[in-house]
Image (cartoon, rainbow, N blue to C red; front, side, top):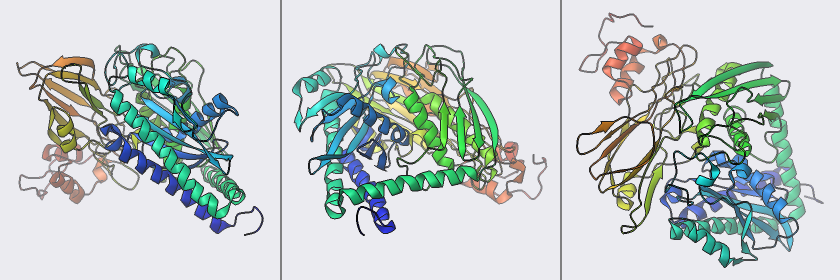
Length: 569
């Protein structure tokens, strides 16, 4: 190696090293966090970026966050200007800047080497409580001011020294001060880990060679994306669907998308989507763009890491007056609900353009069941997590069952043993929901049944979606089933509800949640008998479902009968 040029081998070393740095950052965050939603659920994301805010390395976690972290770094750079020093940490959560709800705190710290700014480390994590009108999450907010403490870029650590006044301010604005400050410390530890690891690389190869390698990495991403788009036939495709409601009313909310490919350019236009809504499914433009990047990546070069050179082939048009371009004071608590549907619409359009990679829709939303106590005598506790469901059948294989939704990626459910140890709630059942996946040559994945029993008086809140537009099938495949919830109180009272603001329930109440399944791909009549039989034996399809959805008659001994009296469709 001579001068400042980087040879291909060095570039590959740098590419993998920065990803390894990010993995170490995430490990530090998870091991240091105080809240189970982070250390068990992995509701977080970390990244290393160059001094201009371009993505270099990222780690597994919530993929929806990754595409928006660079925007946060740009906000921090604009806020700080030249007034930024080694050891500083800036936090923010503003929904209109970073696009998500106020629970997602993003921490950004500059990385210096030999006195010069060389990059940034960033860590975003979900805080269980940010001081909203309800503990955890509020299901019926109509304004950002009801959703908790809102922060633009705020310096929380200066030259390595915590700013006490801001720490006190955070403590006073959350019902879980110790856990929140502990999680902030874990985010800062993740940034320091990235700083230390990147410094090791710079000591070995030098700053100039490092920067040259980064430019090579960016350019490779640009070239590969252009080649991939150019290989897809030109065309235009449109799709639309509806959310059940906006959280406070019964009117459906329209989500529409038009995708155009021309040459090496891909354009996404959200014209036709609903304008801002009174409820909390509005989403900031930054996070909308991040979701479309994620959906793009699932179809275009999914094996390549995201870098500062990715997505330059994609143009995004979001109307100014749109639910996906939220502006003050729009409520954004459930910002991701519309994004799940938007992702499915994008993938369906791409499935028409790339039939060899066609993928039916998935169950779509986070499907959140939350339980908490507001009794000061017992102490505040909050149990909240998304629930897995079924993914759509693909062109060459069945959809996955019991998998978290697209926007949450690496998010994991909290194990029942941990859940029951930390919270007075028993998980009585966690099982596959049979017949919930759409029938098809390639079956949609199944949703799950999750049954909770309250062991003491507490509150419950629910947010389940996609009953109006459940996961649709492709190429003759059937739609998946939508979600369903039953609440049964000890006095025999029973009710079915999908969305519910926090309400108190007595000990002994049972909350049974069922998530939706994915759509099927291809005609059910083309699914081989032995695969239908296997589905029944494994619990994905019932004997009745095999008969009604596939025309395959299976007896009680779980064998296919010699004759099929009903024609397969």
